[in-house]
Image: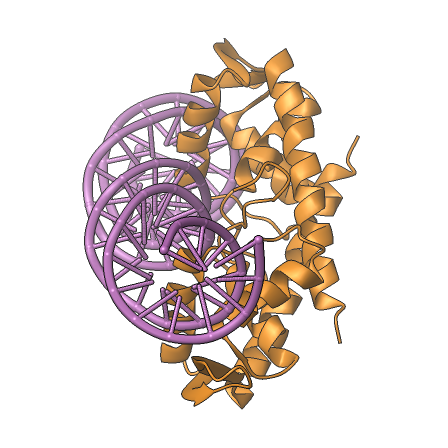
Length: 110
Length: 110
DNA sequence: TATTATGCCTACCGATTCTAGGTATCGATA
DNA sequence: TATCGATACCTAGAATCGGTAGGCATAATA
């Protein structure tokens, strides 16, 4: 990965995917682009990370998938947040906030 | 781990250890306590995570270790940040900040 | 005396991201 | 027309790393 791009920490990818999908249905490749774009090019999710993650997330029932053709005429697999997925997103965001807060506390110690 | 305590994300432990040691020399068990205390009990590092991490970190030259006896008369292995370790702490903090920022950007999208 | 806290360690498990490959279609360009 | 990059999907395997669960020993405390 390019030097200026941060590697994800394990556990953050699910949240990012769910967040990306919370903005609307999207196919896999598009999720990568949306995350990259929203993060100002700071986050680059690899395909080899994304597709297995999508599979896991679908198994857990957080997203549902269907094949469809989009405007360009190409087929793609579109993913949509389920209600459970939306709840999960909230849970993961809360948990992320707690972690960021806790680490901030440690870091502000002198 | 207790429900109210967050699991660490992979990649954050090194930074926490280095930060704890940046406040002064400390032995392993004390590092756990210091991190727990500084985080207001939010972060609980398991011994089975800490000792292997300390080993890795020492191998990388970020800390140096020596056995010593402390006030209570008990022996313990004291760890100290090296100059390299201090640099590494800065690097990891910067990288953490970038990640937090990037994720915040994604999350604030509507 | 028995239990808890302190202090060190290891082996193995589980989860997850990345690297590195593979396949196929489409549009642009040489 | 041939080629190349972008789009779009996938898998296998490596590597990392934190947690669980155990072990051992000593000091403090109930």
